[in-house]
Image 1 (spheres, rainbow, N blue to C red):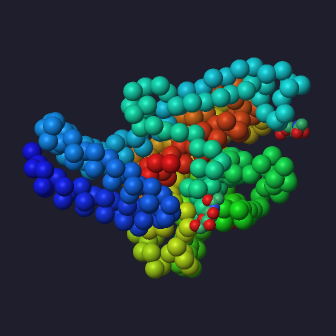
Image 2: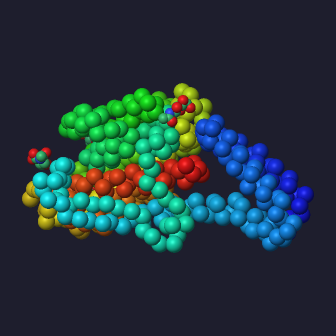
Image 3: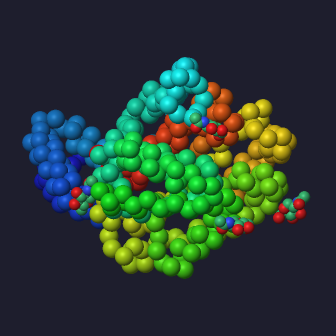
Length: 363
Ligand SMILES: *[C@@H]1O[C@H](CO)[C@@H](O)[C@H](O)[C@H]1NC(C)=O
Ligand SMILES: *[C@@H]1O[C@H](CO)[C@@H](O)[C@H](O)[C@H]1NC(C)=O
Ligand SMILES: *[C@@H]1O[C@H](CO)[C@@H](O)[C@H](O)[C@H]1NC(C)=O
Ligand SMILES: *[C@@H]1O[C@H](CO)[C@@H](O)[C@H](O)[C@H]1NC(C)=O
């Protein structure tokens, strides 16, 4: 048990060093002041109560560091616990070109999920989190839908309409600069894993790395190459180039520090999983033959074997479009491959919460 004096010294250190540590993680000055203030008050109250409740000091020393870090990792593993509520809508009411159902999602109400306190972030929180960062999304049409979802969180409807046309020009790159929050967002058309490897090597050569990198591929390979082991070869080569990028030291990073809350120490990297394919709904005979469930399983297996993902010891965190789309179900897609906006919206909120957890910061 800690004596009152040691505890006081500990408290002083925490008040001093925790906000300084957070400043290192690019917390804005206001937030830093807020955290210092909140910590100071909490600890001051704690110090004065400790003599009266001897068990408090046990509690305090228990609840410091170890638990926070453990929660951090386990919370990441609960991020995909999402439940859907799907309701039919009449076609005339449907504003979107999507299925005749309207889906809404929320995190499951299980105990660990509640304890992690995940939140759907609103526009101002997202702006705050991403302020000043460079985001790159690279891949096929799934990646494009992710971009759309991310933009619709920070732009209003009018701005979205003007972007939609640009973004959906077939097979081309797209760049958005959102001046108000200094966010640079690049979509790179990269249908094959080899295109992604090339991109990663370019980052390395130019010594400029995005703060957030979201990549995914597989559908094009499945349709046009239809060879799972070749897909595996390309994934392993991508893994090697991503690993060779890490760790990024700050002086090799961006031109200047980002102003938002995301650390630039190393890029936050995500892998966009292949959606669940609903074979009978695929819109060509070729797709129905080649993209069957056995082939999809083989591609999933290669992804796991490649050790590209964190769950198999790799560098990228999976945004599991496969499970999100499977749970949403056939209602949520018109072509058995591209899902309604809600699926990608859920993925974006998973990503934002992961960024929050990794920055060890609550809004
Ligand atoms: C909906 O999408 C289909 C095919 O993707 C297209 O042919 C159709 O014109 C679209 N409808 C509207 C209202 O945008
Ligand atoms: C972004 O950060 C800059 C610099 O810290 C600040 O002036 C600006 O108000 C921030 N914008 C938003 C939307 O948070
Ligand atoms: C992607 O890679 C394929 C095969 O390696 C290549 O043919 C194609 O030109 C590349 N596309 C882009 C946009 O880089
Ligand atoms: C599949 O890809 C592997 C690895 O690239 C190659 O060795 C094999 O010959 C390919 N199989 C077919 C049927 O093309």
